Image (cartoon, rainbow, N blue to C red):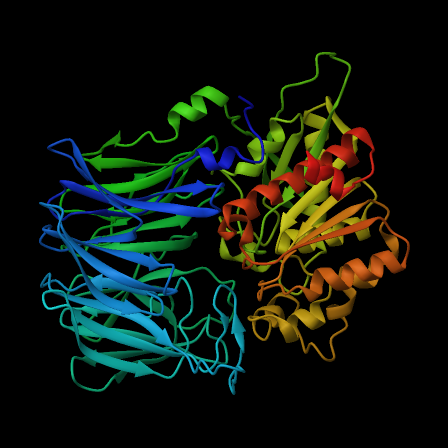
Length: 629
């Protein structure tokens, strides 16, 4: 068999949604396979009974939640025919299951401590047959589409009789990846985003079943993430001036707010409380995502730290279940108990052992008075020692994204085809102190781009077999912007693949779902007056482009909308430049991961073939020839 190609991603099993029972004996998670033939993902919830060494499978379900008593498990089912979702509750001791609710979409849900009531966050929209209507901003949101007067619906479902016993409707839209509601004992904490800046300002309400939501905190910049019934873990800050500021940890109890780990300089990713008041949390740390604990007394302890990312975790009575991935292996489950860490699953290990995966080489370099982190993956070199290998530079999203020790399929795919893969964390990246993250604001494309160039320069000094005359660049979102920008500002790049990037900050401000607040922070000033919205836009430097560029965009991207690539493409073609554009008909901003299996396969194919033709063989990029292969 071929090793790494555009279809290899479908051979992996992708694990997420990890849960551990309070008695530490059961671990539940979702295992997902990509089915290229039928162009769909096939999730299965798996429950591992550790002491009995047996497993239970609940096919075509995801997002498991084990009940507090450990006797039941709730899962989410996608009803493809009805185009909605429902929750199913299953016994963990036999094969019986029953539906307990049907929703347009299950945004989030969790069990109450009584093991009977389930708190569900969903939404409803106007849904007129012929038009959308909105009198708020934004009118759309990435991964959600047109909001159409969306309201957040908080329901309490009785799992015993499968009925909704309470419902409250809030006049705001649900934001993906944010928790809109959590249990706090028998009360509910509801987070309402402020429309002026729904990522930075929130009102927090407290709600008693059958009553009306009452304001608890107003105009704050943190979110309630988890409660143990007496204490609430909040992540964020009481007040943020900038979205790009780091998140911190706070405990709220009986009206008192206490900060945790105040000396921690890194950005907090997520966290959970245990019954004793200890807080477990992950942070972004210099290319790594470790797991830490802050005890009830305030002592800070590392729980799992190394050259890897903890992508998810859950806490039992005496054990912690984690999903951990490394640079050369996708996430697998580990159990941490009594200070020991045991690998529980090896879904992807046999495939990795068979086809091989390359670990990165880390290096430090200086740029503008800063010491920065860079990595490169070395390919299998040509048989002739004198022959050099081309280089592809990857730029992460953000700008407050982070590269480091995690599994990225494209790195292995292109390294296996004879390319050096180079990636760095320029200023503005996550994983360092807050000042470092804020340095890019108002100066996007300036010093951060020089950081990338200096990383390339240092890398070429370290690897004399890397061909400095054949360097490509690629990235998604901010990485797509930087690819566009790089080809207008430097001649060292001989080809670029820009995905879902920005070419004109002015229209991004006005058109993007988050442009009204995000772009005003990243670029700064008044978008209608400040010249930076034009000067820092690749579109206004298009005449400088000398290298061929492939623009890839998804039609349903509302974060960096399609106009950004179309405008750049049209102007480049009008100037007689070599430019190509591929527009995927479906898929959100994160289409590289969330696109359908065939979508992803074709995207990988485009990436491979463009660089093969422009950095190796100097051939014409003919899409009809490529599709025939």
